[in-house]
Length: 101
Figure (cartoon, helix red, strand yellow):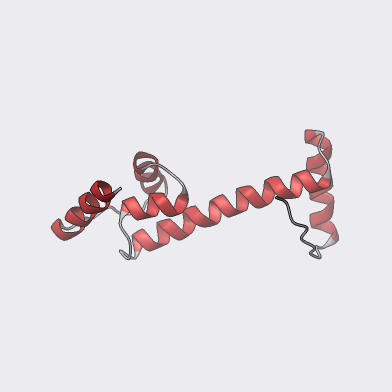
């Protein structure tokens, strides 16, 4: 089910959205939905990476938050230069989370 959301944007942003719509051959609403989806996906990834960096969650949990597989999350950690120092206790937590799924 779709809901309607209204927001005000500046003229420059509106022109960029129109430009993308013309390039892709889709209407403004479709462009905005696509950009929101991309933005939400990026937000979730950044949140997960920050929490791993702060050692507040495991990589397994970060993958879940970001909507990625464990392996994909490991690749994102590497891409974003997030250190992967893991203690024995953290490793045990990782295995416990994996086995509880």
